[in-house]
Image (tube, rainbow, N blue to C red):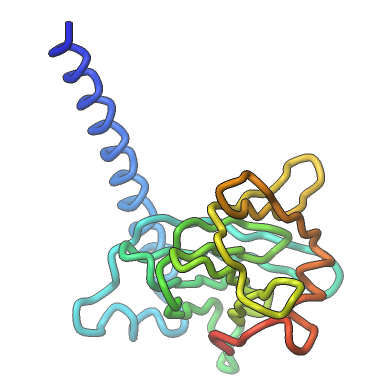
Length: 196
């Protein structure tokens, strides 16, 4: 009985890791086929070591006001960089599409898509926001300091709010799309990480 339970658990773990491997293979193939002719793709592909291994990818679509975002964001296997495939970019020579690469301070723990932005939680408890323009910021707490003890992030499906899970006591902070816009546009409430 004990042996069969252990074998069942090992099989379950292996099936989850196989599923994750399939996702990473799918994401890398997607990058190679969809962004092949895009601006900067060749530079990324021909660098020493070639294209980085990919852990995961997420679609980012948003059309409202002056924004029309059609992108795919790829997280590298080590969780230390993002590759953004911008399908709407137009180069001066008329070439469509662009690929950008952005190193992330720390290591990505999890990330979510919210209203055309990517919200990232890092292993060192920073909350990063990839803006609709591709710029990356650390979003600071209401006291102007880095968030402390962030244990997870989520998007409330009913309200669309970002939910930051804080500390061990199960407390949380909720931020609307407008709250995030205000934070990353108010002096003293963000740190620039990567600007394009």
